[in-house]
Length: 299
Image 1 (cartoon, rainbow, N blue to C red):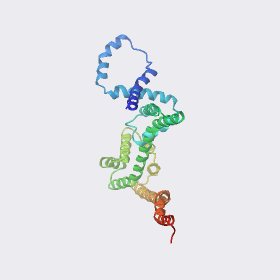
Image 2: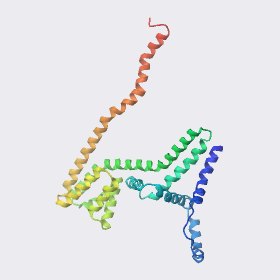
Image 3: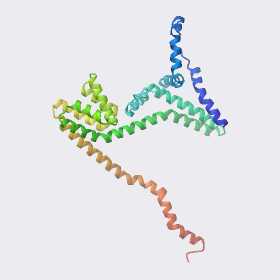
Image 4: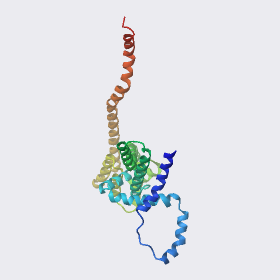
């Protein structure tokens, strides 16, 4: 109970420590402006939740410090993962960076308290591992979500192309077919097509909106589909024919990927069989013989 209480006290003290170390250095406003806006400011503060008043400022301050020490390439990679995972509209890059710092600090404090009776080397190792794990945990989660979303898009692409082909062959244009697909379908790929439609309605060309689709999803099959549609617009080939060809090609790629996973399965099963099944088999086959030998021989 003492360790748990100390851990909770440390976690609760972290916001105060951050506010003390990184105070707000913005110039103070004049007294007249403070008096005129004090009522509205107080009203906003009282109406805000505890998360908005304490956690959000803490994360934003931590994000500013993290941006100073994080390489630009790492920040760009994190932003790309956020977009690919579909969390870009829910979690900002600033919040992501701040959350990494906060989790790393919290796990550092908790691991330091929980390893009080350990040796110095082991304690430092545990604290270091916990800090690094807390710092990279949000990035690991976002990367996992991005991989799952990319796999879902890759799996849904042949079916979505089949639906587009049927709608276009029924007489609708490509943009109208996308609108009908967005109204009736669901899934991450359909959501991305909805963003393509919104981009076109806001003034982007179809090629630019489709390029944005390829960049956001970061899936090779989607890039291939976008390239085929752009080439269709340039040479004037009927889009229904390209859609049907692309749908057949994507299904063939999906079948080949499934066959590849099936061929890798025996290799992946070798280690579990060696470690789990073969020892039990040896015990069943050789165990009785060993027992008889130990009891006095085979005779």
